Length: 307
Length: 307
Image 1 (cartoon, each protein chain N blue to C red):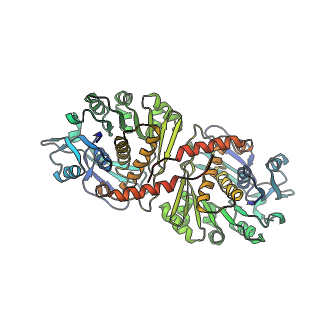
Image 2: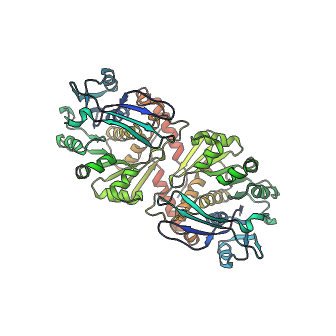
Image 3: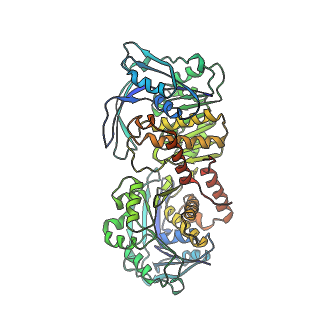
């Protein structure tokens, strides 16, 4: 089985939506990426850090999905990274209410020996120096390196971010971040500029408006599945990235044609994520549901015009 | 050749975008619908009204595209409908600066005898009583009636709007209007409620975020083509509707499968409309360009996952 190495936060989230509110629940980019990728045939490992306030049952949830957590450092006496946010009525935007870095402030990632030859590396949203450090530890060149990031690092660690962006094959960012990073409003122009920064593939996530994949002059688009209810968008972008990276790892094919499929798989998994709070929906998802929704994606987008 | 009857405004527009500004230029829903539909093999006619201030050269532009304008009344001493608007920087929203109904205030549509047996009727955005009056004048039941409307009529003529909505097969509205009409935020739920008002097909236009087609439990999505530059979004929705109605008229097939194709043709034509000011791009479009862009739509959306 091919190997996927995931770096990112494993965290506590407290979420408020127009419908409901949670206390501290399981969250974090690596958590969502790992859960999402676990629906593929692959070996995966998470590199992250938590405090000893982090419940064993949360770690067990990851292990139960066959995710290697030997790279998740538990800091004695440390507190786990905490994020709290409130979504607006349209669920498309949110305010951050609280961010407590805690053990993340001094995080030195350690890649498990067994994953230093991973086929695919998924760098979840974290300080770009942490992302670079993971790449530095690889003993063989991964077939594909995917990087997710956010506007926060563009604001306060741009040189380090540009350094790591140079080293990756795929970057996934949202539309506003693509505009900020490139200085271009048009996403087509933004993608061209971001290509020039290093990544051969640029994925622009537009939330409920789908995702675009750019590669040179080629472009592919996957919509988000129209849902009756969106309950909580937290983690949708990471779930998307995890589905994308997981499918590529399983299929071992980095052609543009196969990346299109990866985008569809990512969108498919993200459509489940938003149906319940936090990771709830992702944890008990069965493969039949995933397959059946993939059929919906086909009928949603495929047409028959002969040219 | 099959017949398409179009009712809607033929008007003067004055447009301001972040890039440039026009004086009074050719505009109006029926104008955009007619130009867009003229790229199909069909006979079309516009029912509308203008003042005698309307330049003959604008009418000649329509005639040159084989559009029958015998149903465009010219009111002696009357002034043509005028709309003026300013787009915000993102080009996704705009403010109306001025609306002068002029001859539109007393408009009594008269369907040319030769089009009272039209195969398809496209009711462009106008007072719902005008839309109803056109349907009343039909001598044979059209195979398909498509209605476009806007929030303005929901605010000030809702009962009349609901009456005409009952009589149509397809309604095309934007996402905000779908929410207002249905009272539902989720577009899936909104479509279900709008189905119950009469239309078997509900098309929700999301501007740069594409368009959704709902039919019972089925849903299809077409993205807008990602463009390097959007110059002026005016008329894009009407161009989309004209492409949709034009393709259905030509193909004489109102299956859901064929409606998917119609949505793609509509999106394809709308992607040209926004590339220049007003109707400029639509007037000199050649069929090769349309075909070539249709190929782009295929590669933008089609994938190969075997299920």
